[in-house]
Image (cartoon, rainbow, N blue to C red; front, side, top):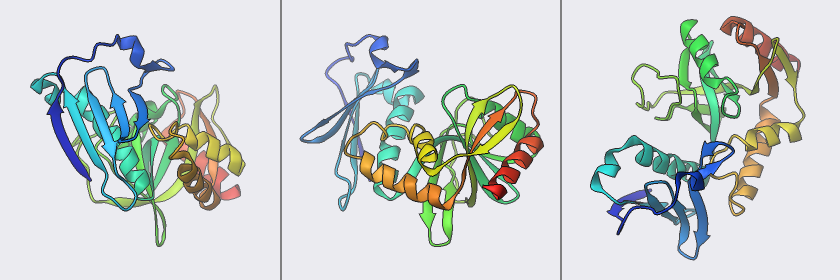
Length: 251
């Protein structure tokens, strides 16, 4: 992957509300003959290549100091990383990732589903938190593994934004929801694919990437059961994991 930086002729002349989708910040994307053009509130980026060629990415900002602002740089890197990972056969999943008994468990959910809250509970219980926002899944010779990435949400782990080479076997997948009581229900493959698809940021709304993404998710849920997990605010991390594991064993 090749990344370049440059300068725009002037600021992006679009109002902030132009970059909103579902109440969340969402840079604009469009495909051109030269690749994918991405426009954010304070940056413009271009992606090209992929497949047999290295992915080439460029970031342009109006002022040099904008490159040092985490908002522009991190959003650019998240988008580039999502395409790069998919191009290499992996999945970037909007999820909380925790390590429990040597395996990684991913809790995918929309914003405000409770990913950061669950991550805090896990950390308080002594479990390692990979990220409360984005986690990387790769299929390897001995099964699926989760890799740490340098992106977090509200939860700030020790050594924040530092990636590592350590990987963990994927122990389970959950579609996380807020609920009045702790519940866990296995879902059918189609529902599991649909639930995880919504948690694959940036590439899940790209028609050209969707077939490959759907194939990867279909294979994933055929190997790892997906559990719909309802969690109440007062549920302990140990109770959550015990319920998830019990349901996964019976799925």
